[in-house]
Amino acid sequence: MLEFLNSMFSWLLEIDPLVLIALSALLLSVVVAYQNHRHNKLSVKPNVDLHRNSQVIPYCLTIKNTGVGPAIIESITIEAKGRNFKIDSREGMKEFMARNHVASSHIIEPETYLSPGDSIDIATFGLLPSNRLIDKMSLTIKWRSIYNEKFGHTFTGRKV
Image 1 (tube, rainbow, N blue to C red):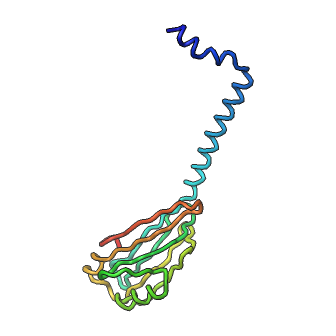
Image 2: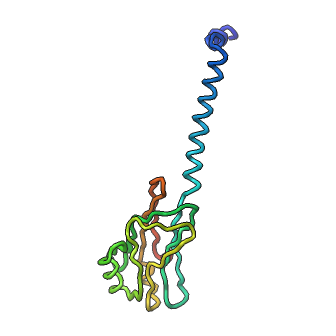
Image 3: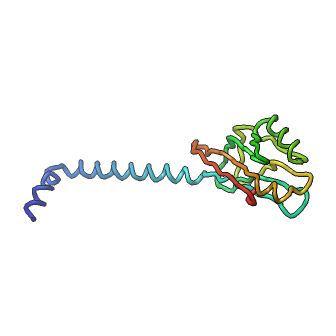
């Protein structure tokens, strides 16, 4: 067994020690660079969350960046009463407002930056929406980080 190991690693003994040290340093620097890149991505990861005040009038849907980096909003779609409304366009927001008793709204255009801790009111309802409307409503948000990592989440029913 010892002869087998000796023959297997005999080539290591023939390598100049300086070359072996240089190769080890190169390997270590590649590993450290990868870990550093991964850490940099995590240190600016956004997280867009939905907040609402459901107990009082006006009922308000708000998105908030609870992450540590800026979120670049790509699209927001609300499904209510069996229809999809793209909130990132004027036409979609006008139609959503007209059909769902929305008193005021904010159009979030694509490529909107949402800094960490910032929030935007998507829609404020003039009347408290019925439980039936909320149960059937869903909101889909798609965003990305400054490293172009794509994220998304769909909030449904009582979570809206």
